[in-house]
Each structure stands twice: as C-alpha cells, then as structure tokens.
Image 1: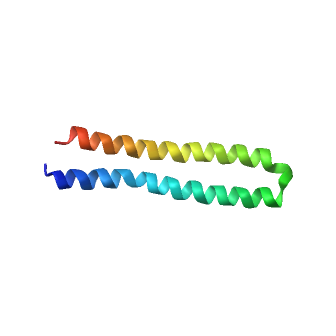
Image 2 (image 1 turned 120 degrees about the horizontal axis):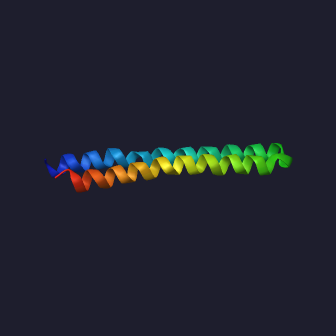
Length: 75
C-alpha cells in the first residue's frame, strides 16, 4: 500500500485522542461547577470524575494502539 494511505489511516485512528481530551476537559469543568454548587458532595463527584476520565483515557490508548498497529502491520 501507499505510504500516504497508511499515514491517513493512522491519523484517523489517532483522532480518538482528540475526542478523549475534549471529553475529559468538559467533564472536569462540569465537575468543578458541581463541587462549587455542592461542596459536601466533593468526594463522590471526584470519584465519578476520575472513573470517567480513566475510561475516556482508555479509549485514547486504544486509538494509539490501533495507530501503531496500522503503521507496523500494513506495509
């Protein structure tokens, strides 16, 4: 296959990181708003935020692994 097609496929696979970054940023902002409104719930909000951030980050890692596999295996 052409090198440019491989690069385009890898770039598309890597877009998962962009979505995860935007999602984590929005979730962090909303969590800060929620803690400001209800400071007594900060522990539960923080726990939920960390769990959601970990799941979003796992999606980004899957995209990175897919990108690496496309580059290495498709030649």
